[in-house]
Image (cartoon, rainbow, N blue to C red; front, side, top):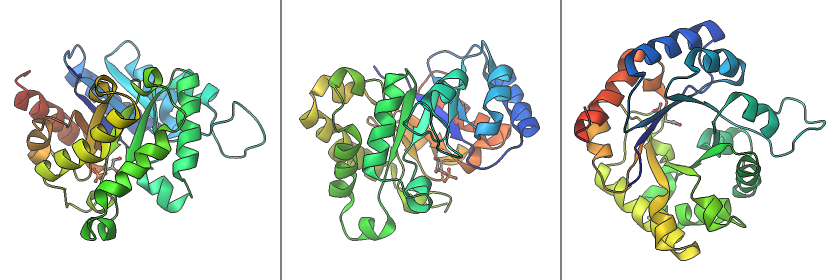
Length: 257
Ligand code: 13P
């Protein structure tokens, strides 16, 4: 059984003080929660303070990006050694990083290996554009992203990753994939491909989140889908009221409330 996992991706929002305030209210609402993993992926500037605010709680902290070298002349980058000091998770290959900052399947793969080498849990994002979706190319495109991300990674290592299926056209738009469509894509483009690359046991062990306009009102219908193990939440993770309601609705839908 895969433990459900809901993570907030704060993107480029929240000063340190704002992030700590949100973390404290999430801690007050969800400390001691069992049966579901929670995390907040904060801007790099807030990782330490939010980590301190959540220390000893069941809410993990994640970074949103990382470089693969341990150190060096790479102005503006964070190394795995630096991320590891402050975070349990790191988001890799988010579509915004692919779109605006030149990330490719190859750079995602290098970062993926670096995260695993340092014991950081990668949340690897994949997902198709609207054009690809309309052109019927979703499954081959996402399958190719999976092949690229997992190149040279063993089955044992692969089981440590979390995947986030985020159709690009559903991010920040208010549009979502239907839960049934997301479930089918995760099965055909992710689990079937992981079964081919590794084995059924490995494919079944990996958690896959859905991301893209997740809100309190639609969380339940995604989380009950057999292939969907949680959510990576953007805009609605920025307030305790909406993120808290997402978590509560997911728990209720799973019968864990
Ligand atoms: P929204 O929830 O704002 O659509 O963002 C999704 C996302 O990109 C999470 O990584």
